[in-house]
Image 1 (cartoon, rainbow, N blue to C red):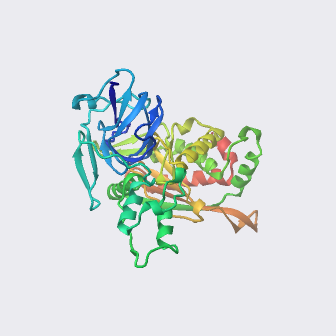
Image 2: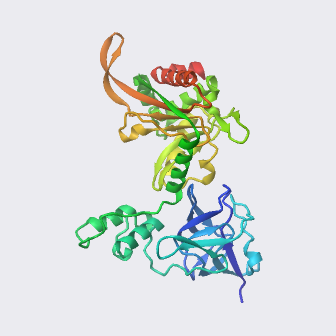
Image 3: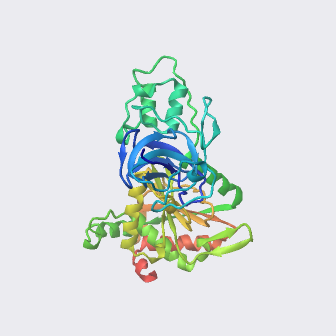
Length: 417
C-alpha cells in the first residue's frame, strides 16, 4: 500500500495563525506534481497559492472552501510512491512541509468553519471536514453566504470571474435581473473577512491611537504632465507605463531627506520616536478583494525609472489579487492616488505605524495664472495626513511644499537627487 502524506497549512511568514480556504485546484483522484498549485487560501492580508511538496494521488480533501484553518492543520491527503515525512499521527501532522517561502510553525493545528447560522465555530484539526462535492460552483465564502441568505442556488448563477468563479456582482445581477424571484430580500448581510476585515481593524486602530491632522496644497502640475509625456517616448522607458504617480513617488522619497520626521513611527512600548533611514513606500491599490497597500521596499535606492518599473509590477500584481503577504508589511510612508476615481481631494487615514500618508487628487485642466496670464493648466491638489505626535505642523507644511515644488518644476528632481 502506498504511503499517505498529509499537507498541512504552513506558516505563511507573517505571524498569522490561520487562513481561510478559498478554493481547491485539485480533486480526489487527481495526480499532483511537485510544486503544483493545489489550493488558494486567504489571510487577513492577501490570497496565497499553496503548492504541493509531494508527488502522488489526491485521496482526501480535509477542508472545504469557506473554512478557516489554523497553521499546522491538515488540508489534504496524498498517496505517494515513497515514504517521505509521513503525517499519519497527530504529532506528525504538526510537521509542516518545507515549501519555498514558508517555514514551520509551532502553532497547534486547528480548523473552524461556519455553522448554519453563519457564525464560526472551532473544530479540532484531527476531525476532517467533508470535501467540497464534485461540480460545486466556484465562489468565495462571502458570496456563498450571500447566496444562502438570499435563497439562491449558485448552480443557477453564471460566473464571470477567473475560471468561472461567481462574484458578488454576478450574484447581485442574478437577484435583480429578470429571473429574480418575487419578494427577494431587499438587504444583504455579508460577513467581513480577509482584506476587508483587516482594513477595518487597521483603520479603527489608526484613528483611535494617532492624533491625525491634514494639510492641503493645490498647484500647477503641467510641467510634470509634460515630463511624463516625454518619458513615454524615451527609449529608456520603453515598455513601461509611465504615470505622474511615479514622479510623485520620486518627489516624496527626495523630500524625506530633508524632513525625516515624516518617515518615522511611535514605539508605544517605550514612548520613543523611531526614525527610519530607509523608505518602504506604500502605494494604495484597489484590487479585486478590496484596498491593499503593497510596499516598494528600499525606495530611496531607486531612480525615477526604477520607481516606474516597481509601480508597474506592484499594481499589476495587486490588481490580479496576487500580492505576497511580505509585500504588505513594514511600510514607512504611503501614497494614495484618489485622482484615478475623479476625486479632487480627500483626508486619508494613516496606516498604523506610519507618520504620514499623501493623497494625490485628479489632474484637471483649469484656468490658472501662469506667466502673468490666465491659461488652462493641469492643476492637482495634494492632501497630507500626519501623526501629530511625530510631525508638527511646520514640518508637514514644508514637506508638502517641497513635494509640490518638484511637481511644479521637475528639474528640482535633479537638483534634489
